[in-house]
Length: 310
Image (tube, rainbow, N blue to C red; front, side, top):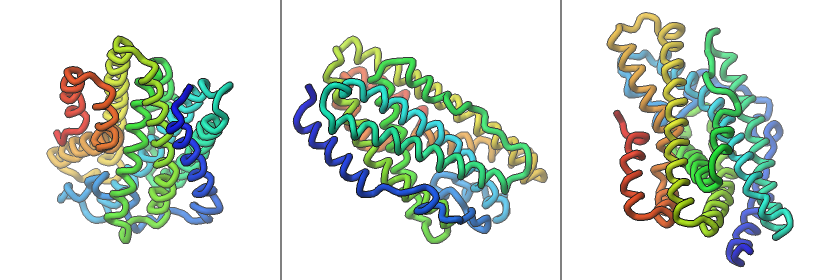
């Protein structure tokens, strides 16, 4: 039996998702193509402005390369959102219809977001020299999340969704200089991802109420493993993108410049895809409410490794 307040929040979330619904082609893309005279990813995420030895053309190209990877990673995240949400819905199959509708709506939106980001990845890659590769398969993140406990999978998914909200805020800081299509992508994605985060947090808190102390400890350990695995995959992609950029878009860089670029991309990707959500106060407050105090202090050190600048 889920609490009355939880049912009410499911209802509000479902109503909001119906009200803000949008179509990939009709409302967002609208026959547009990325404007290659502009950056695609906010500089707070790409951090290209920190590489003073790159020309304006090269910094723009690096932003567009990172956008291709951003879109590919977003597909992985949305597959994870759909899978984790559908698994969480099973407690409502013979229960509260409103909660079930809300879960199914989130999963359906996540499938739509996959279509969007696959289209963006294709359009963005079309403007890059041959040789770009994405190192992870579409199912990598979802499979990792589903092999463990619901507690850990829902915690991970909330962090990923909150990262999307942080990215939207960064896009507002440079709205006038960002590619119009990509600017709308951050906006439209945020509209629905913000409600998805509400749903996942409700599911996580409901799951926590059904979880004993031992299972909670195991969930925390699994969450750390998931984040470590995600961070490792992100670092592999950062390495691949750095090598691709140097070989295809900046072949004249000195060795120390190429090394600086590589280090920055590792830092930028780790913050974008792992650290952004973990640093959100909403995630930290939820985790603090559910994790034992001593254990929370212990994993704070782990979090620092995914959010640090080094």
